[in-house]
Image (cartoon, rainbow, N blue to C red; front, side, top):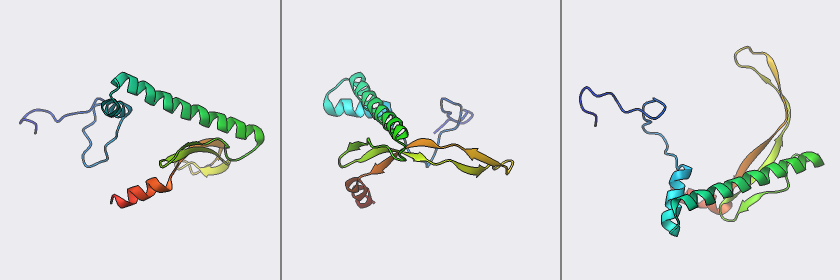
Length: 130
């Protein structure tokens, strides 16, 4: 608890700390936990995590390019972790939306979006933990 007359604590960006909200596990925290569990250095763990993420992003980008070339709405390459889930890409079709400020119609072009599909085992595990 802060002493009388001292200003409340602030985050790096100057905002007050969040209370009652979810906590995030950052890449640094994850690297530290993996380093402790696997007897690696924290730096080596961080490099491994970054390599995995880079490979996922690269595979999804290639999948979107390939599907675009072939005229498909879904990518054919998925990054799958058995028991966890899979990363996929799909094409969001072009549409007409409304600008909420001006209420004018705006044309939104088609784009590729990544998405994550949770595995059945993972979904059941979370349901049991309630």
